[in-house]
Image (cartoon, rainbow, N blue to C red; front, side, top):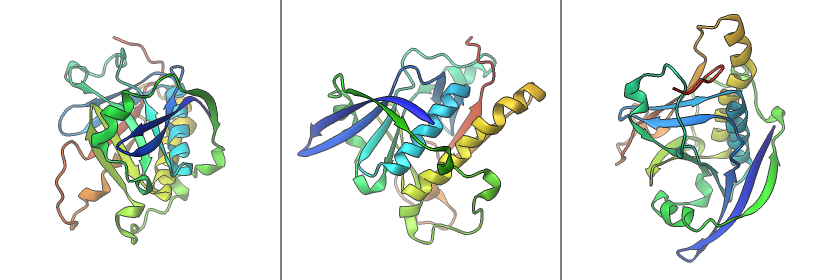
Length: 226
């Protein structure tokens, strides 16, 4: 799977950060925050781009993978006024090993500049089918093998380990492999995956956070804007 990007290096707060920004021709996608959960809609091209971006995050310990989604985007027809009237967000995927604080994102984003064009190639063998994933008890290593949500500067941060992103990528990849065929056979079908902030699991110590703890990603076949 290919993802057209620009690569940027930004110095801020005594650190240098490598930001990989998805290109403008990455399909149609929107991400909405409406208070109690997050909704993302993707067409087929965007589902492929999102899968590739998550796969890239799994392979990139020292990079921030940035998907600019909020500027000038309208959601697909029929999602409802209550969803379209809420806050649109960008998306950043980053491994926890980078230790990047979301509070720095606004300053880093403002210094991206032109960047260097690059096409990332992620083999589809990185993504297993849903039925091949381990759905039993997991996360024995604590938060390092989990997915966490963060919010800053109208951006959703997904932070986790390489295994967490590989699992996430496999879930999103199912929209690419199953969504189009099912939509053609069953036009009224609803193909989606849901990601959860693993820090909110029952029995975990409470932590201070702002924002929803679930991300619903739906495949929008034959996307038509309102």
